[in-house]
Length: 301
Length: 301
Image (cartoon, rainbow over all chains, first blue to last red; front, top):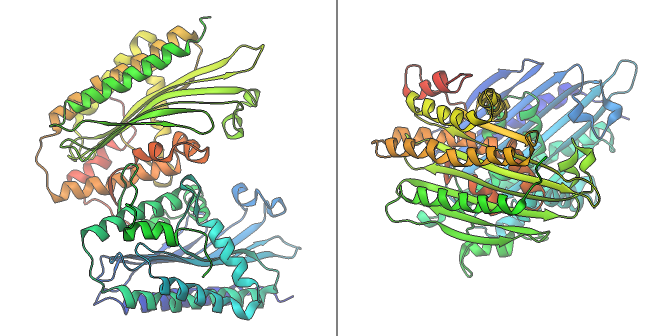
């Protein structure tokens, strides 16, 4: 079985961060990402790329981190007691994009690598990641394109890969307290090592590389659609669901906040402006109702 | 030891909800609370009083609930295994007020009663509750008034009661991931039964009754102070901390969301409009910096 090569993973991740930042800047008039390098007291650090108040993107955050420690925290090993006490390294790229235009969906992507080591024993490692889309006013052709691109990312790795990780994504990005999906899904995978290092790493790269192919065409198609107060209001209201998911359920967010991660890098996923209102429901027959009826349901694309 | 009287508690709680709603309406031009009664599938229900887009209050939610079930969920008995499998009843009033004017603080209050029963055994019951204040632009005299009123609420029950529950409040309303208090605190108590039913119930009533005495004078003094974009912006930014606390840490919120509570009543604590921005810090010497330096610190009032 091929051995894990951390340098190759790190090089890929830093390159991915840069290429995504570059592609998003192409959709802006003049604004560029600012870059914050940071270190973590307990070991490691990261590089956060942030863009705020752009012409296309109200906020875009792309975070690279590489953290390590001498003993895995208990919360990380509850389901894998065999890893307790091992030294670990985790590296990944995580991004959340909140566009200005309510016709452009919010998107999220993450790819990550984890390794737990112990002298004299084989290292335990795995890959995880995925990407998912959260539209406000959705276009069927966009969602089909998003999922077809996800399918292409998976195709070289096995006939059932897309279906399996599409399902996992639907299950993961679900707001239990509202019995509502966060959006229209995409891919989610974790604990991937069964293919050996080279193929697993290849799959993570395929997911990373397909994100821009999935998202940028949607941005380009929809970013200049005219909208008014009504659409903006609905977008801000729906962003509340994004906050609810990330703060109540998202494992990465909660693990980061509770384990001394860099708060500002973790919470760059928060939307810049959000509304809540009590017991609101869209009126039947409106474009807002269509989101719930046609898109926030179990559906194959 | 005096026996618990659930009807007396319920009558008090419903009256408290009504008197708080009435007092808040006095600060509005014409707007009144709307009332939603709801039932809970697994047993019980509640009554939510909601006011939105008022002249003084951007949102105010006062929720009464009385829920019961045949077996306490595991999550509620993790620390008290002796209660597992008992039938239970929980009733309480919980409120969160988000004013328009950034010079008027957000406030929260909660009083609650819990009883777990088993045929042939003594019931296990306790009271909990408290109130806390979250200013944006704080006035020292207001915070002193708030805490002095809390002290008065506690005084008849013992010399050390205020100090104990003030400390518990500081510890509870703390955002660990920012190492920052949510606000300037107040009172927090839980598991209170050591005084017997009558005195414990009397204390809960005293806390409930002192909330308006603590909050309304502050509202009246500050609600007409002129403010602009800058103050509004800071208020919306700071409201993000309120969301973070409630969704990441607040036991009542998380228990409610995870146990099939009524989502819209639980999340009426969410501010109507909220901002996040990456890595923002107030400039030294500004009124915004003063909040962090003088108020969001460990302090006695």
